[in-house]
Length: 265
Image (cartoon, rainbow, N blue to C red; front, side, top):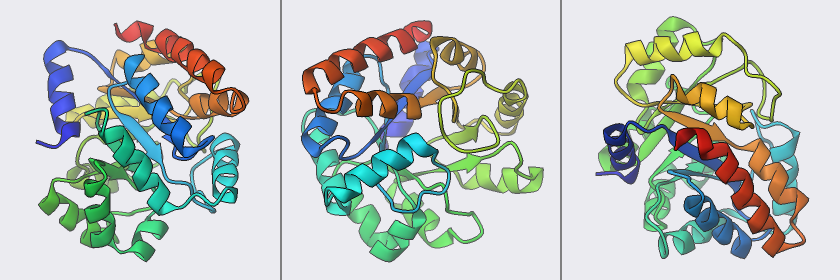
């Protein structure tokens, strides 16, 4: 069984909500990224989103855009992101999901991407700019290889398209909590809870919530209705703040994530 499916089955049995942090591969460097992922796992992460830096991000706010710019300027490329995943997999069985633009995948080649990703120990991909209408090639190939392809549903998604997206999503359904780009928010919109409940009525697949989640109270709120909570920009921002001091970075990250996940324990 795919590690993603196995993890959600395990958590369902324990009646626990998954904590899914996002990190940018190569921030602040490859060695530290590996250490960060292992520290996240030790602090309560259940799955990891590993962002593949891209020069033209679509849904990412300034925090993640800045991380991409910094990493790409250092010469970090696709092969380096795969190598980060490979090094993590040598030390951990935590499910890994690539957060990657379809522009990169398409240019690389869908079959080549999935083959090399799986060889590196990656269990699936979240491809935010992939539509179900244009994604038949990679979605069908991924199913045949038991490689999860997580699809995103926005608050503005038409109900008919929403059902099509849910049908093709594997691993889990990614529910975007708000209209807009990624980034920490003071509050989550009240409407997101109704959206999550509707999605859960339409599918038995796990439904996880991301965009804007940055505080323990957000985690607690999401955990009451969703199968997983995703935190990205707040973690990336912390990594950038302490990029020049690896020991302090890891200590602060552990402290932050331990506080974030307290409502899930």
